[in-house]
Length: 363
Ligand code: MRU
Image (cartoon, rainbow, N blue to C red; front, side, top):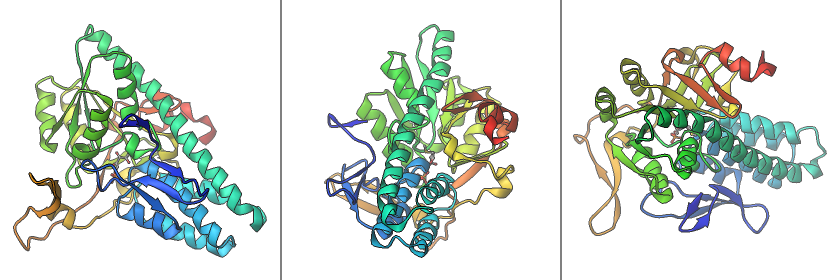
């Protein structure tokens, strides 16, 4: 995607051939800065502190983290230790484990002297694959937006999204936002409601930043506004991303997604989830019981980052001083509330049968 006229991915290898550069998402939307990662510790720290976030980008960063660990020490023991360290950074997004497993498989059975080159080659492939997969998701989701636009006889299609599942959450394109970019580029009249997404405001800061940079008409709304807009016919479809989808089609995504799906069901608004197949956890079925939900710091609830009139970016306290806070970071939307899963291979009902139709090799 383009920022200030220059094409960026969210992660790339520097000219030194080994260290990695990422866009520092903790600085957005007020500053566009990049950060150099030079070790597996740096990569783990970037994931933990949300310098990088979003399921596919977490996976890509962990992949390069493993490369940098192997550069220091290419032994099996070092590989295992780096795997464990990177895996422990965030618990909900399965793409992290998927990417680490892909990386381990690419290097483990090789002689030590070949491991570093093989790891960097595989990490680059995973990144390219992410871009191609998201582009394919975009093409699949575009069909749905086109159908709605045709039904509305060309009048504006109103789309609600939650959190950030755009190019910042991936290597490029995004999952939920890829169809939106394609539809906009094709000239379809659309407007996006971007849920603010408290507590970290990924919608208000990142989704709004991306959409604005691409010229997509949008408005940031308070997380509580979606139901009201749906009741008044001001949302034609919802489309969100996911951090882990079970083999039965239950969907874990940023906290608050479930409430949007409930409101969508009550108002007959189609609720779509866009995902690369690397987000499907084929080993589990019941999302509510089996998906680990990340608990983050209460400080994300009690404080918020913002910019003052003087242009200073500061953290301010929001809640009654001393009030305890709880911060579950994800929730699970049961498959019955999901209209369809948009994957790189097509769109299917959120069910085991639906997924197996697209991925028969998983039967
Ligand atoms: O906590 P975050 O910002 O990593 O959460 C991100 C989300 O919930 C996204 O919707 C999800 O990772 C899908 S990204 C394509």
